[in-house]
Image (tube, rainbow, N blue to C red; front, side):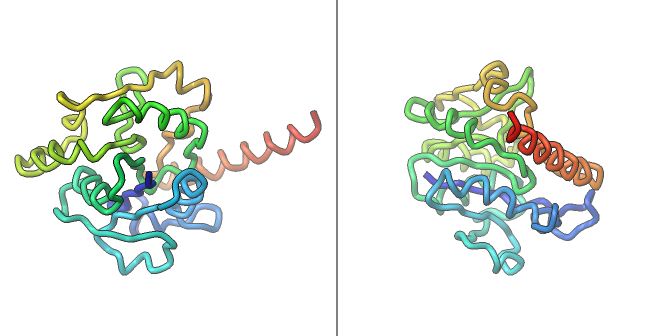
Length: 206
């Protein structure tokens, strides 16, 4: 399995440059995501249409086969590059990925083509496992100009929705799904890091 990071966001609400390159506590957002995935997957693949901006990235960097098609095109490129039966896909703006949760999701991939979290009525398609079996439907949707990721969760693909109760056991605060879109989100991410550091420090005394 590989971990696939999509870095397609332009970061307009963050004032540019590309979202993945915005600094959070002294490191690019992308690096926080990569560090969370590195212990879980032997290969980390970055999908971007500006590869020249990521010469520092220690994994493989690939580009979309169908540019400007949103995350659906990025997922296609990542899956093709990985050449693995199933892979984890996430965004470049999710600095608090929970490794225990991802491992639990991975356990369901033996029996399903897609494993995806669902919190209430919301799904998290950029925190999910996708098998190569999804490629035929991805290509069909791209041909039709239908780029909504929710349309990928359809028969005959077998989809497992991890429910909120199961998620909260491993990630009580739901920080896995916190993504950075605005300056306020960036500031809040720093606060979360400080809170988490304080909690870890306090645990040393108990």
